[in-house]
Image 1: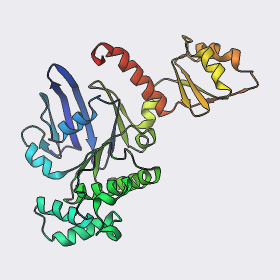
Image 2: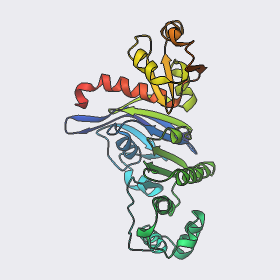
Image 3: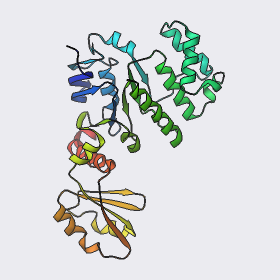
Image 4: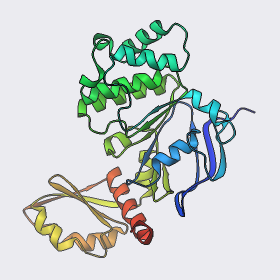
Length: 311
């Protein structure tokens, strides 16, 4: 019977020496889904992605990706994925066309020239085909890297911090292309630190110190947080000093000139903020928690739980 899951793994563990960097990872991903990994540096995001796609052998656990056993059929699996790393890994002294032709040769593709031209056109690179890759801006290098990992028409894309260091427009254009690929049936695993990018994913997993602490759609993660949230704007510095350590306030998140004040108990939170509600220099509004509120809270909890290991 065919599985509905493109990725289906259970109990994956990975150790580096005595340190367990991924702990009992179990998750599933559907075809055409954009699944995002969020978490602090060193949390195991990249290691998790590599294990699920046959690029790294787990120390224990089982699973299948694209129908291939991630341990015993990793060699064949790797032929059907595209991997875009954090750092630009193409040849800067070759043109865009030459770089893609080199990739096509590695994969032994037929009709290389045609495939290269089609890929250049798909990613909007045709006008720069004879430009040296090393002279591209960050956004164009990112687009070339995406073109390179799509050359062999993979069924699964791995994107490891793909938009680090590029401008907002380039990031938006990149994500528009990723969503179009997903519409066409491509499955995407992406690690990111940007909350606006996390909100563009169909589902998210929050990983900290090797453990998958939460998984679901962005809205599900917000709803499950249980947060009661007030947004306050105005002269917030004095307010922040006065309430930052109040026991009824679970989390305070700063967004520019405003604060999100979060609590788990509506009555206790109301008691905490009521002395400040009528101050003329503050404007209060009951609002919904942001995804960033949820992730900061999870990060704080995981740091408390793992503080002895993180030191």
